[in-house]
Amino acid sequence: DPASAFLNGWTRKEAYVKALGLGLTAPLTDIIVSLSERAALLSTGLRGQSASNWRLLNVPHPRAVVAVALGPHLESAAPT
Image 1 (spheres, one colour):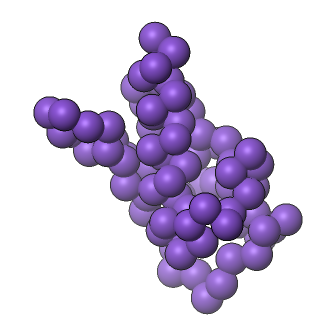
Image 2 (spheres, one colour):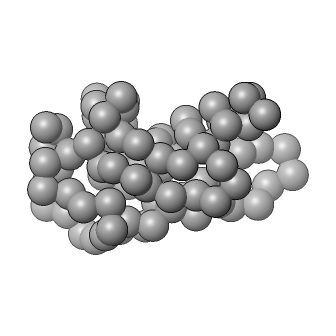
């Protein structure tokens, strides 16, 4: 379902960049996340950041697509 894939992707990217404190200033086109039911960060799009240090989780909600990003404490994040 294309709509579900879009919402999964957008919500996961948003969770990741919010966890970094970058918001929409982050290079969203360089950040790659899974679009399927299984949440995963595939590429951070940021210099010095490894996707393996991050975990994306789906958060069950009856009326919304919700995700949370868990990762290491960062002093700063710099776009590539």
